Image (cartoon, rainbow, N blue to C red; front, top):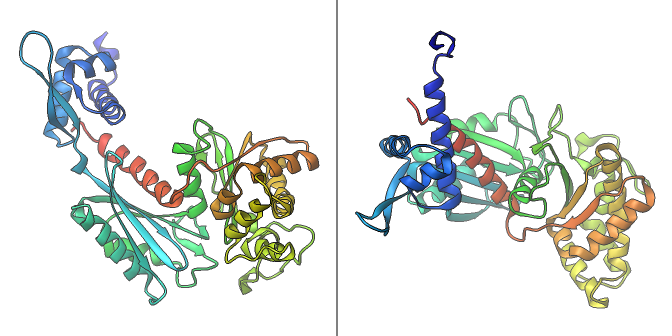
Length: 391
């Protein structure tokens, strides 16, 4: 029998058990060795060996005691927060926001910087990452990954930015420059995709492996989640819904001139403000205009009706191709419109197509792009750290 066993099997089992124990400690908080044994199905001896192994590697630490019956109190163990850190960065046209989280997912610090007075993207990101790490009391060398959310296209092959409409200083070669500058893994991801990651983790798309997220803010964008994984497309352009050729607006024929694309003209912030003015709703932003529209009644007024008809063209075009069961409306305008806008869009889509996805408002109210960046970084770093627990 022993001749048929695969070499390395005991090592693999130890690695799987270690990973399971670490995940349990993250999910359920401090646990005793005995409780870890119960939850993992391991014997007391094996569970004790597991904890000792994780202690030696600096991944878990004793954090207290649990009073029991007879005999000494049982030691409680938890994942050591400082075993690794990650930084998430939300890059916008006017500001950069960075946050540092420890390996448990606790956000330890957050910093915000203006980008108006600089043309040095490397310097901006460097300062934001360093300040976020410093605010968390973490050495930069302990930051295992930096994930930056940015508008525009990210090349799936190289990971570099290939096009960012409102970030003209962000260009090819920036990824390598940032990795060299920070001496740590740096990853770019489209900002709307990161919002979808956050929505799947703790928003309106929890427990949904297939959904699309429509971002309605200054621009319009789309994230596609299939089988629990983001779909980027061959060039990273999957979800650039602003470029949909839709009726009623001019269709630019040279995108290199940074002309505003068709669906963006129809449903972006400028269009929302124009429709608001037509209905006598002066506002400083598209989201403010939507909120003002609610003054006509708790369910909203004519602006929401017009906006829903416009958004439905993009949502319907997406849904007849992908047929997702769920559409999440996010972004400043999507959030301001809430359930009233989502219901209108759902009705309009059902009226003009054969598909009938459920349309819901975002379940997140604060910094979804930043939280998606942190979640993406944490997932990767936990795989690296927890997956290498056996020497």
